[in-house]
Image (cartoon, rainbow, N blue to C red; front, side, top):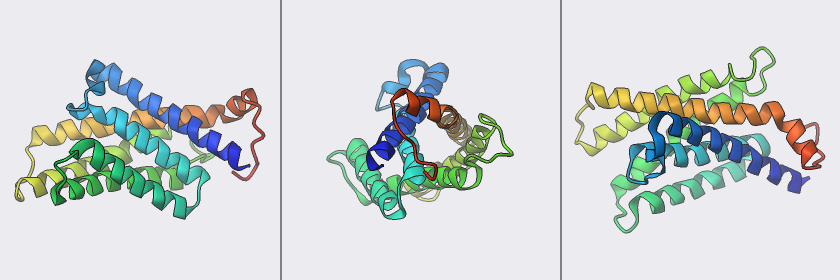
Length: 195
């Protein structure tokens, strides 16, 4: 049973990540693979967001909290390296909190909702993540700039990134959920009814 859930977590994470990266490549080409570019979020948020969703789906709260701590450490190490500071910690906490809440809302209120068709639901993640990511990144900007409000151009860029990230992760996860039985059957996995 645990083995099956671990494979489901891996599959859901892969499909969400691929959805995010493909969306990034379509709109921003290969810049999504450069760690120094803002669009690298299509890789990091794709992995983190899909992994979060799969843990909401298949793991308990204690394991979800542990994953959040691991993701925070991962972000700090990846983006700060030797230049660790309180500012970077605050930045990563706010950024991951935005990702966490948008994925949590999407999972809790829209996951497998019989009244909403697959791929229509991912538009809700577009709204959730587009809005929450814009607020989170704007807050980071305000803190880093000694409480100066970000310019409109910056807000538009962040909103567009958030919308596209939500779209990519949502499409990838919806594709997995729609084809979960077939994929598990192909891998000869017996999926429990109450997962």
